[in-house]
Image (cartoon, protein in one colour):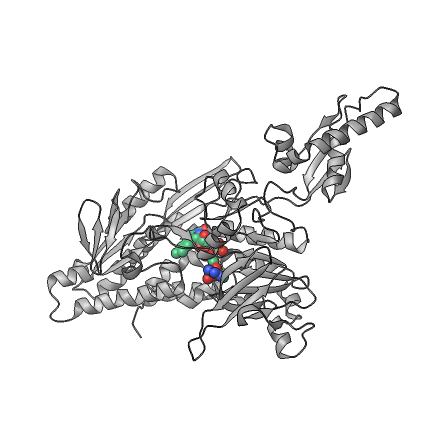
Length: 571
Ligand code: FAD
């Protein structure tokens, strides 16, 4: 597919070679530059994570001028990020530059700060500044936009977290953490460091018992046991790793039994797991727990949950329909963008959202989905196909009819607009034994009392059309109004709504052990723990790499670690 993309020039290249069809960069309001499209519609993609990356790999750049805006010029394979913090794999092995993923997209390294969904304009600010400190700002007039900005680390308002804790979200976090771990060991090795200072320096606190916190604690314990024992033999006795979790168990997304096994594995590899504890403050040297306990630390890693990006909160506040949709999904208003089952943002036109920053409306094909890479990647690929088929327009939400097609007596009839579809529905709903069989959301809606607003809004038209059709049929048949029992009408979506295919969840625990849980199609239920689950974890993650290059690099890193150990030298 990429080969096809390569033939086309990106907007930036066209600008360089003077082959723009229209002036793409024109002065906009407030002295900002405005980016205009050539003859193709502009598809603006915000983000370069799991969702955006899988979308831009598949989207047809013959149909759209794809502009990607993200502060990160690469895709990051997040599941293996904890391993980079201790040097099991190298940072570069987990990255794929956006321009390599699809050379035909225009990539702009910037943060989108604001979207005006009415005017279809996105306001962006570069992450870099000119010599005079001014950061370039520009606006993008889009035809369709996809919001895939993910989420940021949540601090829950706990004082000191932002200032003193390390996070585990981006490569820069893992780089900083690796340097910090190395520094603590060098500090503890210095002559004159007291025993108390040494203990504090080598105390690692991980806050959050979800997959990221557990994987980091497990990988850190591998590193301490396998590498530091050789490099700093005198220090190992002072090292302490503590995992703090506010709930009563860890890895709550897994089966309870697997969660218990995870706890036992961590404990046996030297990690102190403390559940039911709440952090109330983090100072420069101590983590303060509810109840007054103080834990001195050298490194505190915070992975206690996610919060919305400012852009998402801004968009939610601009779209009144979002607050009722949020209530519908049981979401805190402004925390995620509510989308319908075609990933269209509720209350906005030509605006789509996917991945962690979005929430599927209940009943829209899957209910609440977990904030995982698996969901984001599947949504990205789905949306790319929808965009390529050109059926992704209109306003999101139950208020709009979905794109659908109708099947009648095995003859497929298509209805691309509301009135044609209503005509069909009305004809089918005439009495006299006509059987009505409708699929998915439309079926539920028609057959239940809770019809979505677009059906309810047209119920009078529907009744009138049905009455007229009945009358017409009675006239033709001389009063015998029954249509045959074999009259089957099937309403299908024109495009399939998004459906998540759950391929299971995995977590590495350290000591070459992992958890794997696969539950699919109500029949498959696989719960694995231990060395075999670890082998599965390894093979899944190697096959899930986004390119052959990354696969080779990671295999090489794993081999290097086995033979030479991990290297976290500072430079
Ligand atoms: P992201 O991948 O977070 O991408 C968001 C993108 O938007 C980024 O490129 C960001 O730079 C960009 N962005 C942010 N703000 C703006 C803005 N204002 N304008 C433009 N761009 C912006 N999931 C699993 O399924 N399995 C795992 O094992 C797993 N392990 C994980 C381990 C770690 C350490 C972490 C952090 C996450 C893990 N996840 C895992 C979760 C998974 O990474 C996320 O669910 C996934 O990244 C969500 O994809 P996304 O596209 O929604 O957002």
